Length: 267
Image 1 (cartoon, rainbow, N blue to C red):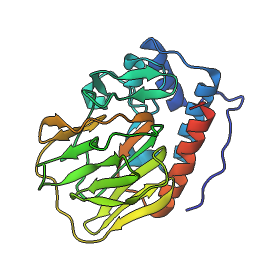
Image 2: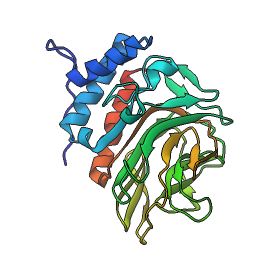
Image 3: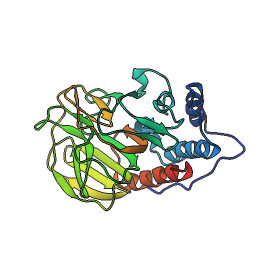
């Protein structure tokens, strides 16, 4: 797949879906700059032109600077659990750069259910982290039984290490060059699980993995462990998305789109 060139906002106005999202942000009391508006518009254009938009179930650009404006799933900016709006609780910080967890009590419940909305062998998460010093015990995601069950999420450890769960429990996978940047985990089959850092393949798992056993909501800022919140992180999120599985080529394109969004929005 070839990356489609960026096309900036023109006289025809904003992408209609981007406009709906920005309208929801404004209605909720959020504010944004013209650069942020342009960045959101371009994000929608690029995801659509590169056939990634349909692979995303929940899209969180984190615009507006408040909990009320940051909660919206940009693909369906309705204030309901069924629309995958985030329910924030705990000591989150909200500003023009996104949302920041405090590593102590933050929960971002996306209301995406592991066995209903996320298929066992066809799913991905993608996020941009601005944190340079993550705490070692913090995770995002879902874990159906701590220590033994399936897990779908990510842990960035102090000391330059990375732990990853993609339908399985894994230990440390290796040293990453830095903590900030784009992180993508994708499951596209029982024996095809990959993790990407800034668009490049960082880890591949080929042994067969198991399905999830419980209906759990996907969390950011912490992990939903069989209905109990654990492993709080202190990540600084500038972008988050969750959806169906993507290929290695798509991960590279996805990274370019996310990076462009972060840069254009001034994050």
